[in-house]
Each structure stands twice: as C-alpha cells, then as structure tokens.
Amino acid sequence: MKGPLVSVIVPTRNNHETLDACLSSIVQQTYQNSELLVVDNNSTDDTKTIARRYTGKVSNRGPERSVQRNVGVRHAKGEYVLIIDSDMELAPDVVAACVDVVVRNPQAGGVIVAEESFGEGFWARCKQLERSFYAGQDAIEAARFFAKDIFQQVGGYSEEMTGGEDWDITKRVRAVAPIERATSLIRHNEGKLYFGRTIRKMYYYAHHANYYFAKNPTTSALTDQSGPLARYKLFLSRPTKLMRNPLLAAGMLLLKTAEYAGGGLGYWRAKRHADEERS
Figure 1 (tube, rainbow, N blue to C red):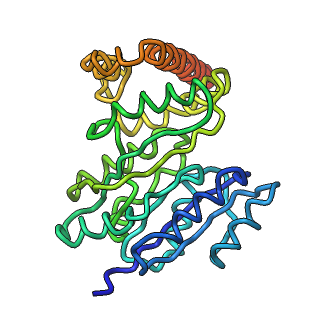
Figure 2 (cartoon, helix red, strand yellow; figure 1 turned 60 degrees about the vertical axis):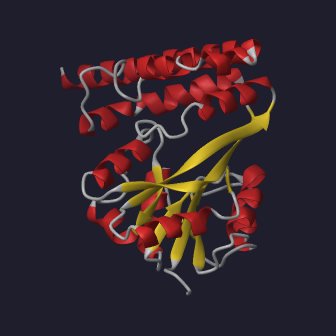
Figure 3 (tube, rainbow, N blue to C red; figure 1 turned 180 degrees about the vertical axis):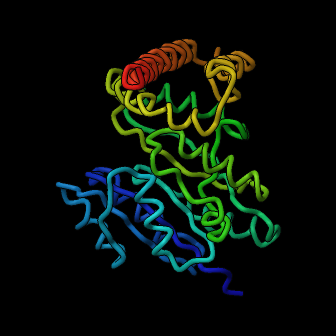
C-alpha cells in the first residue's frame, strides 16, 4: 500500500553548516511517498545551492520562519505536512512512524515526535540533558506533523510570532482534533553552543513574546504549564537523573536560569516599549 503523500517543509536562512545533514536525513526516509520543499529567507551563503542538490522545490520568502512555513504548506501537494527546522535531522523512520499514527487514527490533526539535542562542548551537553526531561510532556513538546486540511483550518502558524509559534499552533490544532505521538526521534543539532549566544537568542524570542501571550493568555508566565516553575519542578522530580552527572546538571540549571533571565528582560523591555507607545 502506497500511503498518503507527505510534504516535508524546511525553512532556511544561512544554514549551510547543518542543512546538508538535515536534507540528507529527509531523502533517506524509509517512507517513499513524499516531497521535499525548502523555503529560504534571502540567504547570503550557499544554503540555496545545497538545497537544490536535494530538491527542485526551493523558494524564497521571509521575513521569519512562521511565514516561510505557511508558504511551504500552501505550495505543498501532500495530504500531510511535516515541518522541521534546518538544524534538525530525522531518524530514518520518522515519516513512516507519523503516517502509521494517522492511518491508525484518521481523526488525528497533528503528531508530536520526540526531540533529542546533540552538539559540541559542555553547554551543548547541558542542553541535551535538559531536552531529555521533556519526552512525553504535552505542555512542552509541540507537534510538527499535521493533516494539511486541519493546518489550514486553524490558520497555520501565527505569522506575527517569532517565538512560541510551535506551542501556539499545537494548542489550536488540539482544540479541533486529537494530537497523537509517534515512536521515533528528531535530533536537534545545537552545534557549538555558546553560553552568551544562547542567552541573546532567548532575549530575542522573548522580546516578541507579547504576541504569543496576547493569543494565549495566562495568569502568570512563571506558573504556566510550560513556564519556569513547571520546568524546575520537572527537573527536580528526577534527582537520580541529575545526580548521575552533578556537574552537567549544575550547568543545565545555570544555563536554563540564565535563559529565563534573558527572556524575562526581553519580554519586560518589549512590554515597556509597547506601554510607552500607547501612552
């Protein structure tokens, strides 16, 4: 049985260091009935050249990945879409595992695939440990595989969001259809992870978080199901895991705390700027 067509969509921007491994993992999937679409955002390196080695379906659109993802879905011919970032690598059976889920439950609107981090250096190992706590956590993990009609029904990714958009669309899909899980793995290539760069990245995303919270109101970002207190509680609920490598655990907690500090500052500055503009 051939199975439904799956469109795999990859937004890119100056990703030549990780893109080859990403796209290679897609074309080597055990599930054959698929197409690959790459939506670039004005790359100045050889990202487009690498993409064209794997697919003729390479387009250009910006300014951010939510727009790129939506453009990819509009161009997709598949009944289902799998949307991943260009620093991710798929286990060989990811697409097959997702299709198996929706064949067993045709009502499913989305599928979550667990993610695992890897990279170079101490801080990448800390990030790998952190992400290992999230497997099976519905409040933290987000869907990446969608029924195209459900994706379009909920309006796709919120294009004004530059952070939190994965959780946002997962919540909206879950409101109209079940979200299931696949028994496979997506590997997230953190590369050479630098402490300061990671904090600046969190600051940038949190600076735009007002759009997310406007659409997903919460009594407190601190006590939200995916917020800081919930995550620290999750970490501390598994002391044996932390104590297997105390130095790595301490680094993970330090990095996460610094990320939240950077994110909090970004969010506060954005909110203050918005309040000043309204006054």
